[in-house]
Image 1 (cartoon, rainbow, N blue to C red):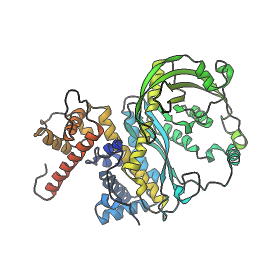
Image 2 (image 1 turned 45 degrees about the vertical axis):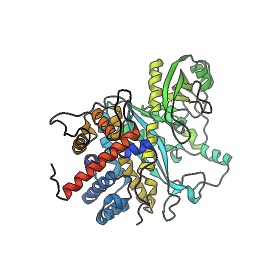
Image 3 (image 1 turned 90 degrees about the vertical axis):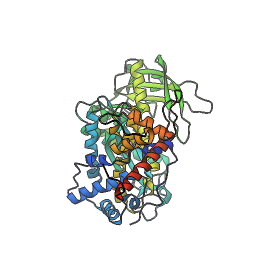
Length: 499
């Protein structure tokens, strides 16, 4: 069975690299996360735990390099090849642990839904793949993954509540009009868009009682059945509109379209938001003008099985939030969001809260980059789609953990450092920076440790220098990691006693 190509290497994306280097020294979290794993085979449960520990310790490395020995590598291969190691079985202890974290976070939880495509078109021997592009061509082959990923309102990822991985069926040979007509008579349960409904249902079922859950999603989720399904489940949502839908005028202040209703609404105020960079744009600040309107959306015309779908013919009342950028930089596309929600939005402060929540959706895209650029999951050559699905499920959990560690340090600097760093890391860091061990019995905060890490990476820490940046923290992580590895090597060689 073939392994992943190449060797581990640094990622070109600075944010992803910082996440990859955060907290990989300790893998005790793996034992806690998979404590209740039940694959109906105790040996397989132990194999899952051991493989997860190896891969979490070195997430950017090929399987054989991460596992360290031929026996461990073979055990990992057997895990990914075993039908008993189902993807729901691998994920179940994680989403249960995620629910526990949600219950303890003390506030609303944002559940981001999104889809990511993994390309394996260059792996000519891999069987069971499907199209991930607009054709059935060999270079457009891979797997599709849809997730519901829980975040705190400050942007710290808590874990996965729902995940589906599949290979798309062959694309029919048809023109645009034929495609439209086919989709019009196809029940939503038979469409790929049903992924949004499945994830919404599992989110509601798996969320702990008493925790306020808001599903946040981009324009692909804007189809009428999503709104009616959420109404049936009493699920709260905040999604971006894809089309200017028709309204029921008598229930929408006389307006017939959503954009008309927003243009008639007064400006509530302006808001500054941070727009992260991506391959097409630079990171920047944007001044957003806010408007709000409550409207009732007409049900779209349906044919065939659609016309008989439960609840699909009843109008749905929503609140529109218009967020439009004023004076974008020359040559830059203006930020222009129309958000749909069934949450109460009574004033500017409430509208601002919802826009800031939607802006946190970029966190799930960072997670996608962690999987692709950091963990390099598209390099995997397990040669069968079913093996890749198990592999992707396990790495999805590892990727969330890497992000959790890094983002927790940013969002909650006053937490005890032991929530992110192992005791050995804290001791070694103190020795490197202060030339002394931390005082016995004294708690060290995340802020203190992050600043020491910055100093180790070259941050001067002067009054006007601010907090250490991502690249500085990179260097600090690497130097700390090298020091801890040296300590372990000396202990293994018997040259230094372990405490």
